[in-house]
Length: 476
Image 1 (cartoon, rainbow, N blue to C red):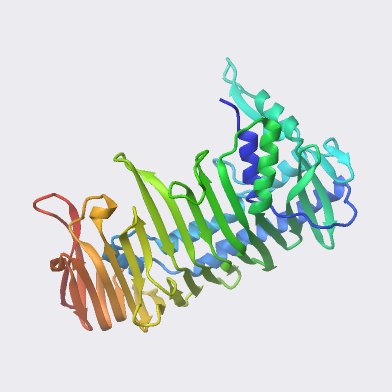
Image 2: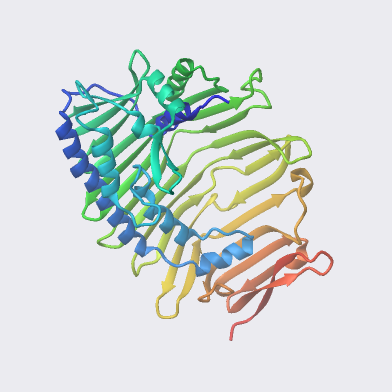
């Protein structure tokens, strides 16, 4: 089998770098290393502090955990968001997070300065060769148990054929790193570094063209595919322990893959599209322990072929969008606004037939706002929605080809407010109505202000399946 590691590396790099632009005279190697030591270190350290402090304002998960049980989901929103954000700045540079140690930005900076942007690797005019030791190193253990680092010869041959280099230049206050590939030293990819920002652009058109050129150099076979669109990300330090990250779809994204000889617009191809959108914005202030998040996924579609062992099945997802804004802070409630799943029903088709549909507030503007508050003294959370939360779902298990559970949730309606206990096993309806509609209908419930809803796990007598049974009673 032909080794494709370098080709995969080039495509992956294309999904994390951007399009080159005109630049000033190249900086000398010592200036490049100094900028990495100061600017990159500043971004990583302040970003880490912003994430660590800013996520302290996230509430717990008692109320959301109870709703997870109602819907049969496991979102774990608060702890998972905190974990994801904490690791964000630790994944961009090799060696930043040791396998058995805490986050260490100095390790990644040392790798770049000591292994890549060295005087020995500088070819002049801001051009740096990428030696095999950087890309193709592998560690083995000799007969005495001593780790020995060697170079993968196949990887080294592919690296030489690709003529992979990095051109460093400046444009105003920005330091730019442009990837060069091939004999013509094409530059489809770049990343920009400023003292307080990293800006990244993914240009799928240029990335695919670079992959095609590299495949010819290496004698690789590329899949039947077409990629188009552009995505830009930016991570900016706004102050001490204060950072903002944004991700935008600048041009509509379109990705298609198929086997050789299969039409990319045919039923057997994988296709994904997503409209131009302000996809994500996260701002975290570690000093003030507060932050905000805005989500703006536009209309998105996906088509794929899956085989569950009974033969190929064609799946089609039509997601009109996912939007919402959140603000949070230590000692403050989590405020959600403009939460929506777009302007129409979300559908999943299997072999052209509806297998699942989801509607959010179809009779109330298809959006809602919510406030999630924590009582620090008791550990209890309360959730209030406006105008209401009306989530409707329909599942056809015969079309999906799976076994039906004891019951399906077909509607969750909260028109008012609820309060959860500290462990999330009981909901008290504070105002309005909380209703769960199921299929079969006998497993649902309806509760009004003053009622408490208790959850317990029960084994279904005929099948032995576990399910959540609900009991409604007066709160004591």
